[in-house]
Length: 386
Image 1 (cartoon, rainbow, N blue to C red):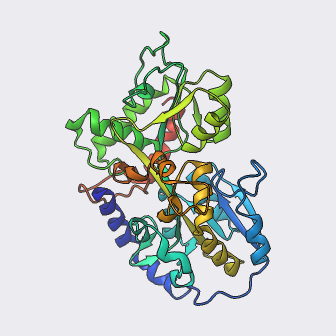
Image 2 (image 1 turned 90 degrees about the horizontal axis):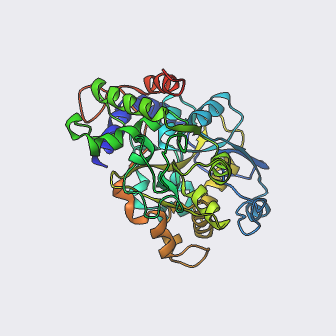
Image 3 (image 1 turned 90 degrees about the vertical axis):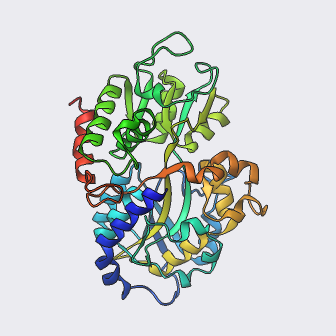
């Protein structure tokens, strides 16, 4: 975590001018709602009971606020950034590998936390997190966080896999068959960090201290591992529901995934489980951020306050398999979640998770690192077999 905080500090220095520029535009009061709020969100993050009638944190908000919630689902951080660049949205549930890019690109505005009464209930570890706080200015409200887990088929793996090697290296699995063509990898440049995280543990001679801060040699090693993985992967996934179908119908038995998919597949009675292997895991801490040109800022502030309500945080934690940004949601009984469920979702693993953040050339752990634009172009090459 310390090295990741250094990365955030480096980015903060780069973006300090942006923070100063936006500060004057911050809202100082919340007025009457405009009638709607338009949100870019990860799948499963904003439910109104259409998927499962038990999970609905939109309907009552609309009734109480008069703000109708419209949602555009995005499957990757890059897609979120692209949509926010296009405009027409009020809010986005951005992960750390998108949030700093949105701040640097001046696509989001500061959030006045004094206008959010429930701010005091937010986990202290998240309030000033470097992926949404620049030069002391907050650019969002923490939403949910969690690990990128290793999801696996329990009929193939009689014991939980202990290493990410099952998706990086060719091997015979518990059913006597090769893993080739039976594993998946994430369809996003940030997956390079998963390879770097694996190498941190298994090739310490590379000297990787932070999977988001890679010098030329470390970066080349990560790409080499990903090219090796390319020979094993049946699909690079970005759609959670397509990945679930692949586990059900296409013979996929192991992949990096989100607890969301794990929970849904298990609820259907399928032989699915997940684990954080010995190398640890990357993860996401998502932040609700407001577009710089939000057409409905009052409804946006009402929604951000609503997202911190304990029952929403609790129910969303159960639904998505994530950890609430409001710790009380694990224990106060106002929603479906409980202390055991939060522990299962990773509450105690915070310090083991290497949270997504945007790679920059001016990094904290060494003199110079490979910036994110290189990750984008080179990962396209890996997927294309180059």
